[in-house]
Length: 69
Image (cartoon, rainbow, N blue to C red):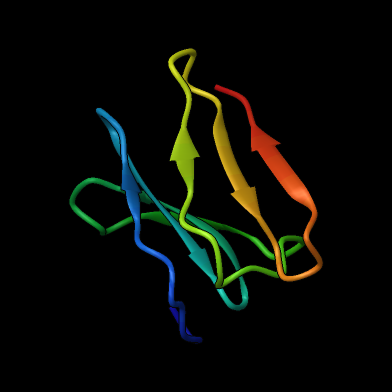
């Protein structure tokens, strides 16, 4: 990550999710591979994982994001 975050990561069975200041990161469990959704201006809320596997995060503009599996 290039920027800071004050949110905690969320960990599923095969991924780590981080709501960073410069976007929403998805990491492999070994942290060697990652993707970045730079549309999410985050860094504040910790991601939450629903029972159905949907990942939720709120950005700095108070917009709720949902990422399906």
